[in-house]
Amino acid sequence: TLYIVGGLAAIYASYKVYKLIFPGGLDMDPRKDPPTITDSQAITIAGRCYTAMASAGTDEQALFAALSGLKYNDYVKVSKAFGLRPYFYLTGEAHVFDWMGTNLNLEEWIIEELELSEIQELSNILPEIF
View 1: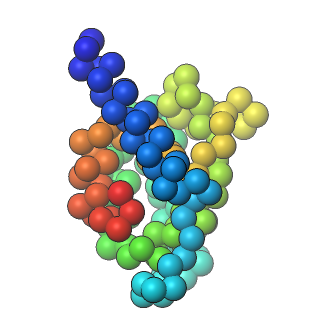
View 2 (view 1 turned 60 degrees about the vertical axis):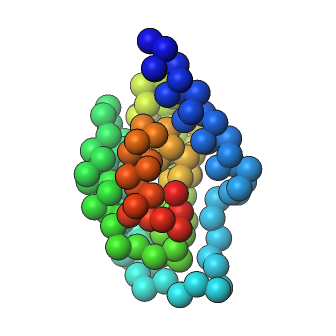
View 3 (view 1 turned 60 degrees about the horizontal axis):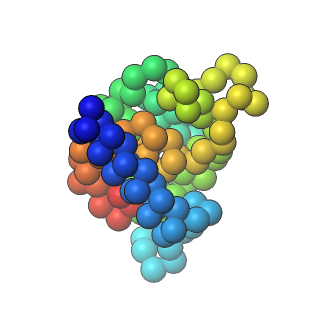
């Protein structure tokens, strides 16, 4: 039980730090390479991310596969395509009734859905983001 409480506290603290660094989501960085994916590809990848996280139990491997190989500005494009989607904290999934969920962006969904060790694994895939 103590490990669960400690893990939840670590996730919450990570989320708070993230919100301090990225209060309104991510923006394109003109100092980095321009995006290499199209708008259509970004929408498809965002959909794959959502599908991996939307039901009970996250498909981490599908999420990691969807995000693998993206550079910073590619990821920003995917994040913008993801937009804000309702997240139901009680069950940790999307909810049929949008009004029952809290609108979260892609980064917030990922932080809610993954354990700290999985976020660390994701940082190997997207080191400029996580």
